[in-house]
Length: 323
Ligand code: NAP
Ligand code: GDP
Image (cartoon, rainbow, N blue to C red; front, side, top):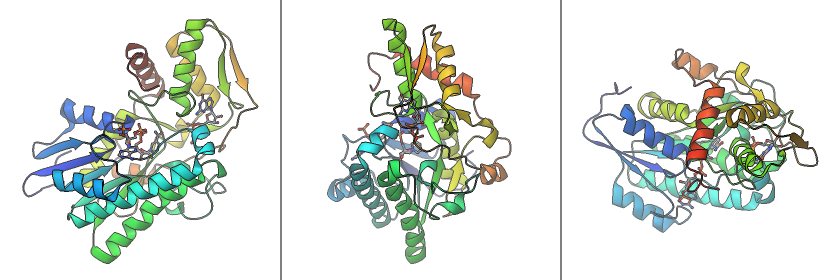
């Protein structure tokens, strides 16, 4: 994975380094995924509030990165998005503009930012591919987050056109794993279900799955995503983004995802579906054809195993987990 010839020492700055994806990249680097000529710096919001241009420029000047993995964002599940579209738009537009402009001003060689498959048009053909980002309005539930994220792609193209900068982006599907946000109201479906199942088991109550359980999602394990991020950082040369996803055949329903959590935690109680709650987008099935053309042999962790590992991490770290 370290075959790219580089001159001199490289310093990779990871914004959002304390989050789900950042902690996974940190672990993969520590477990041997790093290169000898790479120094890694993982930032949290305590190092700099990236909604502030002044703080962003200062933290970039302090660390003088040669490359940047840009993960920092206001991130949340369906229900947090539905009630905070303005905050998602404003925070993320400011963070992204500040980070990309600071990287430009400091002459950073490469920036890899993070989009999401939930930013694609709601009315679309399936499977979704990388060319479709701007083809129509996103789902109404998360339009603030989606439009802010789409603008990263616009800025990447503009930085290349005007200054020849290699600023690109990846497009992961729903991510989950250790260090996720297990807050039930704010977080995504899998950490929410894991936390709810844990509590239902402890209190002898039913597990309440929100919505009908029929929507479909492709989930990617954060550690698989981390390995792919390292490949993109070192090898991927396009400005056009790339979808990082398991295959279309690995898409599961929310009901199947809930069953997997129930099995992993050994929950024996009742499972009920609260259909008064929103289903959100029915599906956003993405194609990983482009990824497969580059990496035909990449192996994803089986969903069941990844859910089990995440459940075990949550139980073992219950006191300190984000919740
Ligand atoms: P996360 O766990 O919520 O972590 C967010 C990170 O951003 C944290 O390190 C947080 O720092 C940092 N951050 C937030 N606001 C900041 C600010 N104003 N200034 C500086 N840092 C700030 O998110 P994640 O799930 O790892 O997401 C990482 C990236 O993947 C995001 O760009 C997200 O849009 C994208 N993505 C996520 C998913 C998913 O399912 N989770 C799916 C597709 C794409 P603190 O820890 O200090 O708060
Ligand atoms: P999305 O993939 O961007 O829509 O975001 P989520 O990860 O929040 O997934 C939302 C889907 O999971 C919807 O179909 C919800 O109805 C369903 N869901 C079921 N239970 C939960 C839960 O406890 N939390 C969340 N966030 N979604 C849930």
